[in-house]
Length: 410
Image (cartoon, rainbow, N blue to C red; front, top):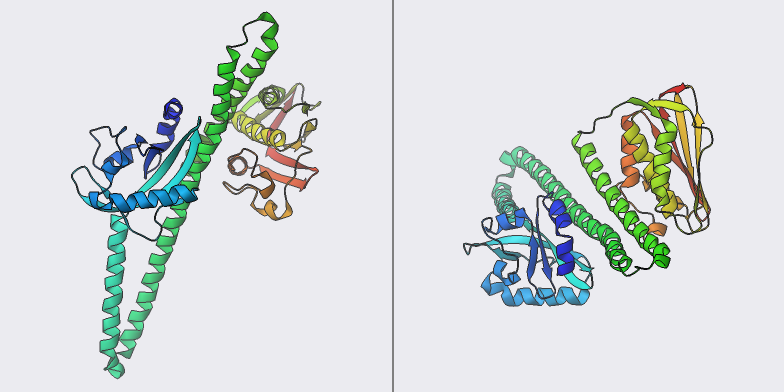
């Protein structure tokens, strides 16, 4: 539980950004974290339920069957919806029972096991289903009644059937979209939990070990762990920047600022930060034709694009390989090529590579969020740029970025 407390600020930051209830319990079924929506849903806005047993939120008559659901979940483990196909009920502070849907996501942190639950109040959904059922019964009765008067009512009956099909189609479509959205949110929470767990564990381990190397002759070991900490922090910062950038893009709040700046300054900063991520024997080949070049473009977006593509090249390339940055200067545009000798992109994955959260099959075991390329493409399209790639599995990938601009050579 101490391990989770260390990361509670990150949990609070992410959990309060979603509209569903989020609740985390430990292996003893003790509540260790909730977001505001959970407290509001169960009527505990004015009190803290952390430290309470999960039975506090479950009707007494459901304790036994709920325990059976939990035992079944623990045996099968894995991310899934709890008691799928059955109706679950929660208990509010005032004793009122209400229907809920629960998605469960197990995870481990610092050797301790937890379960994150995504809770949705489906009172309105159940009422809609009841209304739909009643509507179907009523319509069926109308059909049976009108059969005896077929000649007089055939036109009206046909129209009613058409309306019924349209209504059912709209409702089914809405329910399907709701299920897809809930699934996407569950995947997102699972992704965030996984993406933060690995670097945080590395930072914690290195921070613990660095204090043990106190001798002057152990400076190289101290620097190794300090670089691990710095790299982990850069990685976490990059993830947060990606999520914030994604949010601004979705809300249409992204503002682009075009200024004149030194191209070599931006490339130097990107390469310097990327060096923290290099594997043993990897080397970044710096472009040799950008000194004394100034361009007019959005400096922040150019840095974001190059950083994302360069980090991908490092991440998906083996040790002892070169990553080449090439720049083509033209009258009204500039072209960047990031060339690696990595695992490449499978043919069947190429058409999906810029989709949000997509990860190619040969990259599933490598850490990544699946949103970087989606953000890069969206930003470039907004400022009139283009991103493309060529890739051969097992031999490497070339990502190319074309940007319109004004170039000033001093």
